[in-house]
Length: 190
Image (cartoon, rainbow, N blue to C red; front, top):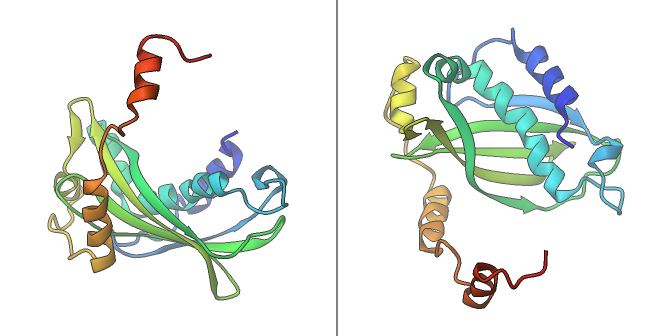
């Protein structure tokens, strides 16, 4: 279940927080609650992605980007991510989340988020987000111009550019001919 109450709490908590620049970090503190746990009493890897919403969306509010998107009828969607897990966040443990936009290209915004405890990084995510409209993807430069920001992105870090290049080599849709053929014929069990 999506943590709607926690999401609402974060949005209310930061609605009047000082504005930050598009590239500045947003820092928030969270706790790993029982609904976040896996059978090993630690933060579930899928729930980690959900909890990152609790940092990313208030960050977008603080930058003013959300207001610009609303004014134009635009939305935002996750278009890809890569997560590196290094330490376990245990039940009831408090942690700090750092969220920031790194830059953009012709189609996507690139953001990084990380979870920290006592100065140690527990996990880190690189995320590609797409601004959407009824006509399709909105160029991030157009979003920045509409928000009264610099349209040109700073240079993306080398590791982000390498991820973009590697992901571009990945076939889409993935090639699974036997399964796809069985599904097309309705031969897969429901």
